[in-house]
Image 1 (cartoon, rainbow, N blue to C red):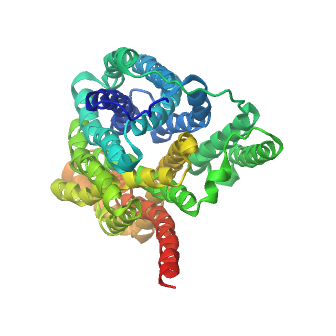
Image 2: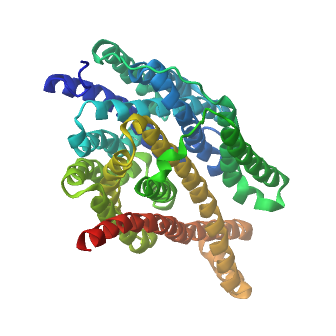
Length: 511
């Protein structure tokens, strides 16, 4: 009789867990490191925020699409081989990202990095769960969450330090030696896979869902910049999105080999778990994770290192509370931990984050973001445990694939929405400022400034215009933060629905 994968010694469990956690840590670390340097890349890459946003968005799109083929690869070739393939690709792509001189080339290699992260994250999820018995799923997720959650805590500070003292390229180069060591350790120590399946893959469905997803995300990214449906390209992208998804649905209906097994969604709790993960983590939390470095660098005008340290103030709480959430999920249940996390998150996103602006003292700004770190730390482990508990064991890979897919797609949506909203609310606030001004008073005021400061009237006028644009950007940020909170509120609906089944069970017991 073949022994179970968790029938290993504590030493083996520790070694295997450290290797797979390091892989996940490297992938997540790179994501958060890049987040904090993106605002600084507009100059070196000769682009604007719309352009450099694609360094993040392209990564997420590639990861989301690659996730759809990951289950097939794991079952066909084994988790160990796919994990090491992901680490190898990620390492090579990191090297070429650091060597890139144009926005196009760095986006190209970020696409490869994103696809590699998909392989790393799904396999590392599956492998670390296989090292622990079923009754310790929460503990396994807490340990895994410690690794992947400490990365966001360290990432911004590390990214700021490397950028400040060694240049932005070092952010990518640092992955190379880590990736080489990790690949070597994995080849030597990780156990071999013994269960393989001969599966047929639906490449036609993958093609159609890729077309639909990519078109949708490009439309979201470019919509505000190009005037939405007043622009021919946006109309074309919308049409392509609809056609892509319709053809995907038809392909799935007609095919014997489904790309995605939707029977998992027959579970009420699994469906709600996916939806709350999509809206809270993807649409909402990812917006704040993208916006806070921009806030510290563009509104508070901090150097990159100081911005990283400011982000560390809340991100360290993510790493601290992730294992706590895992232990609590085993003890009191994943649903209750998710409820507590959501309540803290909603209170933070509605009442604390929108108050951040240029005039907020730095220490106060850091303290106001701490509850966000706590909520995010409490969220990841129970959400994962909930999904795995409501999926058959043989479909664990698919459950993780779907979870990571909605995280990446939701994160792409969130990043695109955040970028669009920054521009939209900045323009709205600028127009409101212009409407409230008295032209004759402004003219007299500018003349007075000219007499005080010297220079030409056009120079004084241009300086005042720059001040207006900055203040419209500053106050617009509060609107962007508040807008992100609404997506969290939508996700909270599905958290509440998780308790519908619990209430029904209690009523059956009472009757």
